[in-house]
Image (cartoon, rainbow, N blue to C red):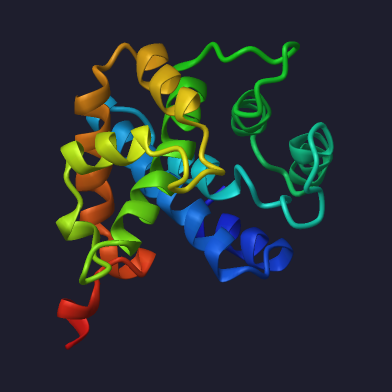
Length: 190
């Protein structure tokens, strides 16, 4: 599956601009890791795009992503991608095993948290987000309270990457696609 096809599925099932941008942010981070690891960046990008495509129609676990996985199978989405999407939800019967599965899990909550950190910067730009500020905000339980901090920490650990390095890597990936993510900030549009 190509990223354009995956994006069409996202847009078909996801009406919220914020949720679409979340899928794109995860995709950007996962694709950047694919390039770093020398694996298929398009397959990894598609996985990131599709990981929450069904959230609006199946907002409860286990419906999300189980029922969504069936839709993706009908659409011809590769079994490796579908398994990675199932594994990101933490189902005991679908443990994370592959590098793609670990990477998707590691980038999911973190990309959302980085986005939240960018939104509170004066310019609303990811260019202003730094590792230290992300880690400081992680300690503030009232900030972006829906983001699971344990998933961020455990995701980096599962990948065998120091947390600071993982945060920095994802910030840089998101900076490179800031305009697509709506995170270029007011200084870029002024």
